[in-house]
Length: 210
Image 1 (cartoon, rainbow, N blue to C red):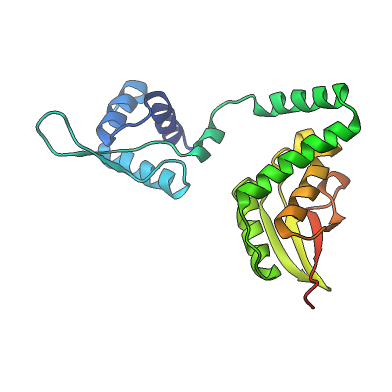
Image 2: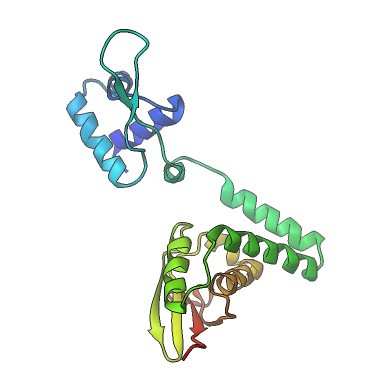
């Protein structure tokens, strides 16, 4: 990421919210002279990438014009160091080491069920459910899309949000199968698998209405 924009994200992370004037003052301490016009340009780019919120009006406690404040979105968290992957991998390893396979399956099914409940896909024609499923999966980093196939539809996920963990733990791939089944209301058939060298994980969803 461009250095000034990364600094702006760091300022918003540290302070929770900030005006253009606040950001200008903080950036001048970090890297010397910078103008409000330049800061607004960077804020616009960050908004386009959905990393900061639309400006919110904040009324001043002292005389003067109200000011607009900016805050980080959830998506911006990806630009800060975290230990999620290592923690998740450790948890999965401990679950697998200390529980029988059936109990692991129950846990993974529960996680898939919770995600499907969150998606709240209603009982609609299959084509419409495919669109809603893709929207939900894309909101969680799967980079999903679908295409028509013989006798149904093929759902592709071109990014695995937990690829490094899934390489050594097939329970997560099984969880994705359960998730797709719950989202669509139909048991799919996996026809491609990234772990096996394919470009996507692909699931054949039969259209029983035809």
